[in-house]
Length: 121
Image (cartoon, one colour):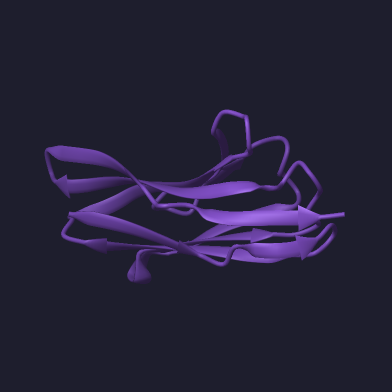
C-alpha cells in the first residue's frame, strides 16, 4: 500500500506565499512522476505542475512563473512553492499525485487526500 500525505495548506492573503509538501510512504520500487492538481468549488480538477524523477518540471500556464516544483527523491517528497498567490484563481483543494512503480512490471497512480489553500483579497 502506498500513501501520499500532503501538508502546508492554509489561509493567506493575495500576494502571499505558501509551500505545500507531499510525502510518499509504503512499499514500492520507485516513484516516477510526481505532481499537483487542484480543484476549486464547482470546478473540475485541473493539473498544476509535474516533476519527473530526474527533476524535469512542467507547469500549467496559469501558475508558470509563480509556482516552483521540486522534489527530494531520498525523502520521497515533492514540494510546491507558491508565490504571488491570486484570489480567487489559486483558491482550491490541492492534491498530490504520484506514479509509482510497485515492481518492475507494475505501475499505479496514487492521490493524496488534499490540502485546502484559501487566498483572501
